[in-house]
Length: 126
Image 1 (cartoon, rainbow, N blue to C red):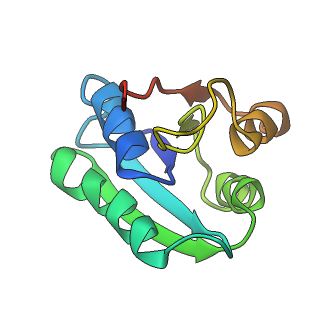
Image 2 (cartoon, rainbow, N blue to C red; image 1 turned 45 degrees about the vertical axis):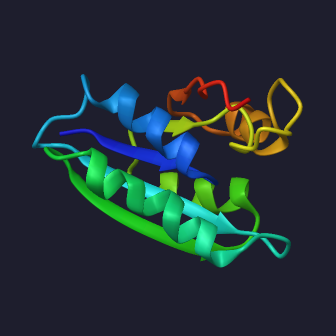
């Protein structure tokens, strides 16, 4: 049994993570989908981002979590508290106007966790 943590800020990131998990996750696995609401973000976006997993992933148990705070802090806490085996994250917010490359949360998570972190590719949003 594997516990995956999908850290997401957009429906695009969640969809990309679900595509990755389609061939990996089984009925014995658990997928935690977390979206962190920051002061400048719309709380509805967090709910939309997490709900995508419930419709896209059929076999594993899916639990959605929305929290306020600093995304990398919330992710690190969940990894420690929930015995997460693997983290999936997008390279940056799923925003068509975002600059290419790793965003701050992805970079922070990559260097701060002691579990595998998979950066899922986002679709071309332009």
